[in-house]
Image (cartoon, rainbow, N blue to C red; front, side, top):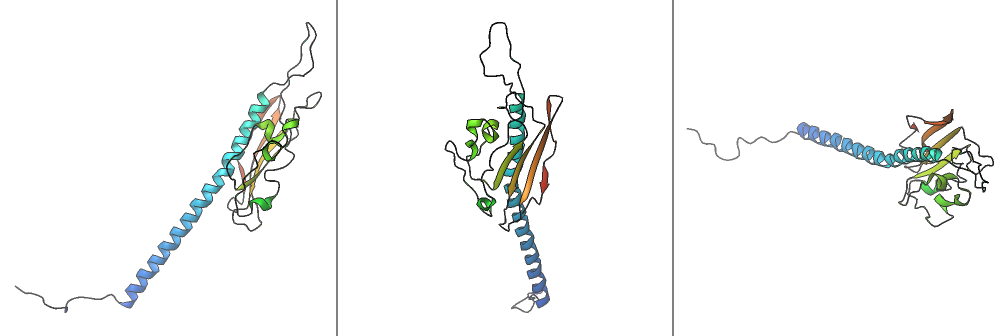
Length: 200
């Protein structure tokens, strides 16, 4: 039987081995940082995707609500019901992209501001019944050639629900857009969200 005494048989790491370990740790750390950044970016862009999808759903629901003339009807008379798209919002929320340049924007929820600015004319976000009460990364806009308040009412031919963001604050906007169009008195909504530079 042989017994080993002392430190004679311990082997130290060579400089090359230590450099390889340090390099591997560096690579793993950079991959982890990239993965976290992608996760955070995806979490932020989920806001835009969900919101424009909800706006398009709200536009479809508003289109299906039948509107009739507000005038008083005489006996044995009727009024034709009309389906039309909500008219365009008069301004985006927030009203300027500088308000979401690398930061979140808290919309103003009081009547006559931001989401409810078009309530008196029943257009835009007020007509859609769409609003966000939590801070937002994106600027939202709704445009349409429809107008429920027109006399006689005019059926719109298309709408666009748009989100624009500047997550990294470099002035380049990312866009998320859903389109819809009226054909034969039915509203058809695009199946996909059109995205441009989603991580900007």
